[in-house]
Image 1 (tube, rainbow, N blue to C red):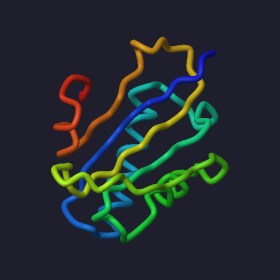
Image 2: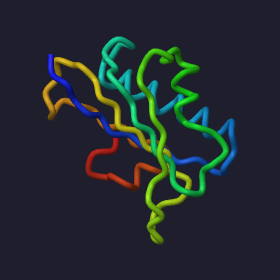
Image 3: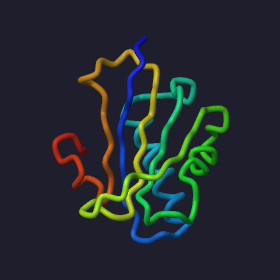
Image 4: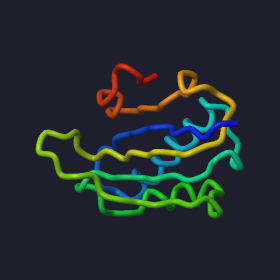
Length: 120
């Protein structure tokens, strides 16, 4: 087993609590699904939000998915003037037999524009 980092991002339409939670649940679930991961494979998840998203902690959505025993942390992205707005990102550290090249990074909704080279 190797420890791997998986990146992901999604975008919401507005700084709305339910939108943030729903989009984060979708992102976390898709990362797990595309990488054939189980709950116990997840070591930790770091969530970030652009400075225009302040209505809720994205980690709450992961806890709602049953990840209350996984170390979760939220932070704010730096305020780069030309950055895509209303973006939630994650970096999940996981245990997996997959090689680095087999990892599926996940970019959903408008955030697919961030990494067209690896977005599915």
